[in-house]
Image 1 (cartoon, chains in turn brown, purple):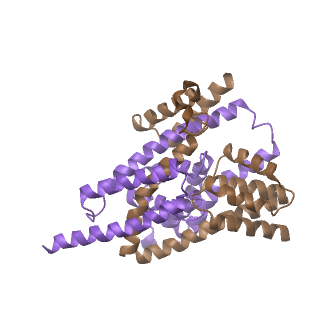
Image 2 (image 1 turned 90 degrees about the horizontal axis):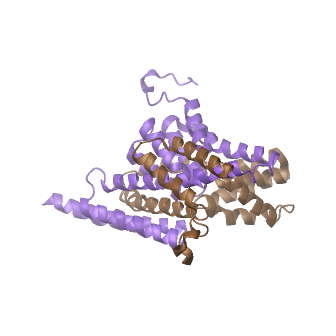
Image 3 (image 1 turned 120 degrees about the vertical axis):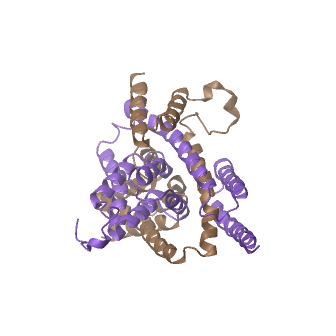
Length: 190
Length: 211
């Protein structure tokens, strides 16, 4: 029971103090692993690799994985609850506050600033996802002049998805299903 | 499902079932591959265009908050959308829905570990999905940007608002994407700049009205 509570508390902290979502949470998660002695750096790299190839938020994948390794299925449940609860509660509080202070200069001004920043963050996320998928290393690098640096199949998939969503107006879910199937076929057969 | 029976308040929007909320968010969670931002094209399409759960402006604010508050973006957004639909219970249904695929997939994967990581078909499927997500996110970002440039309820001088929006977007993209500055700092800077900008434009606006 002690272990379960510790897992919960540790991941509660991760959820509470990490901003920017997903990969930005990994350093904090790494620190929290150290407190569960049976898990080392190799478990961490396993976990990062797993989170990349599993659906869902990386932080939730990580919490479930580490909780499972440390304390079985109950451990997985407690760690996952821990990482989810802070943002759930904070969001509920913020919604209440917003409903009260909507229209004040501070709140409206803050939103006027955050809204365009959101676009920048979304496009930055695109760059992070592109790293290692569309190109072999970081998107901006000295090797950009070398055609061998680009992964041409994913680039093709990328271009076709833009056409499917903007010209044919397919739903995002359907584009992802089609491209997932295309990727499986292309890489599975090759 | 139907414990609320104050007939007057149950318009069509309130009727959006708990199971429906859960199921839509479960699907979104299942296809959040490559980080929390990957869910945004889906949530934008499902919640505003398909279900009409949020207006386009509400969705903008919801995404902005999801990225600015601590924790998992998917949960922030799920909580917001669920709460706006069905209060606390709706927030819970959406959050559990968006988290469950991540939780279950790890349990299943660890049970059969090794078999999946090396499978070229599955690795290929994920590569395909991530490449598609890049395209979807760019299209969604442009859509949101255009919508922002329209401004709302005439609070902004149009041209200067477009310039402000574009410059702020580009600056934060460069700061986070190319210089690796943490998102928190960029968001905090955005809040400060936004408040100053809002003061100036609102003051100018009211002065013009006074004339």
